[in-house]
Every structure is written in structure tokens, then in C-alpha cells.
Amino acid sequence: MKKFIVAAIIAAPLFVLGASHADAPVQGKLEAFVVEFKDDKESLVAATDVEPNEVLEYRLTYVNKGESSISGMTVVGPVPEGTSYLGNSATADTAASLMVSIDGGRTFELEPVKRNIVKNNGEMIEQIVPPEEYTHLQWTAEDSIKASGGKQFYSYRVRVK
Image 1 (tube, rainbow, N blue to C red):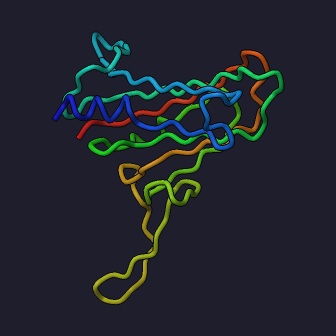
Image 2: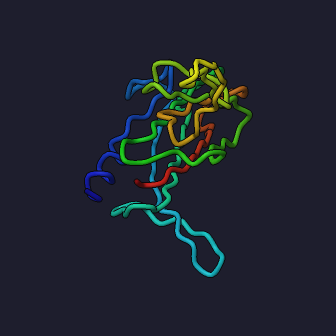
């Protein structure tokens, strides 16, 4: 099972809307790391084998190889099967809005994700969907990615089930 999860992590698709071809000016790379804690210090080790309950950090790096700045870039990071997203762990090194999906990436919405549910007595209440149910994260960059080598970084963490 653990080797399968690592294969799924490494093979997880990267999405940049508007720049998804190999010859596109913006090229993406996904790296997966195991987060290790020792003596109250945190370190990241390349993910080769993972165990249940380990925390993984995904790092998405995008480089603009083109001659023009790119604006309005949207990046999507999947939460692979066998893992669950750790709330409030998504970061970006650029100004970007974050939205999440709970339906396999078909739709995205702002956090907290809320749903109306009907209790057994017929009463309708609003319930917050926990981050563990997120299936994808989506950032929309507010800043342009500069031409000729400009970079943007995004990251998030998941726990192996």
C-alpha cells in the first residue's frame, strides 16, 4: 500500500489553467516531502516510502520560460486518495486567492465550505465541511509571473490515512 501511495503522489497531475502543454511558457513541477519532527525541529525529506499518519508536504513550482509576463494564472493541487488535507496548510509565495473543492475538482468555493443539512427532526442547519473532505485546492494568482525565469511557489500538506 505505501508504495502505491507514493506512486500516486508522484503521478498526481499538475494543472495550470491556460498553460497545460509541455511547450507552454509556464512549466510546473510537483515535489512531495515527508515532514519529519525531531527535537522540536521540522525537516523535509523526499517522499519515497510513506506510512499511515505521516504528514506530506506538496510543493508546486512554476517557472515562466516565455518572453512575456503571465497574469491571472490558476494552479490546482490535488489531494490524492489515501490522504486528507491538513487545514490551513496551503501557502503561496505570491498574492493569491485560495478556493477548495469537495467534489473531485468539478467546482471550487471559498473556505469555510458550508452545506445545509436536514436533521432527523426535519430541522435544517448549516454545517461546515471539514478540510479533511477537500479533494483539490485552487490558487488564482493576483500577481503576474515574470518573463524569462519568473517563478511562483505553492504548497500544502496532507496526512496519509
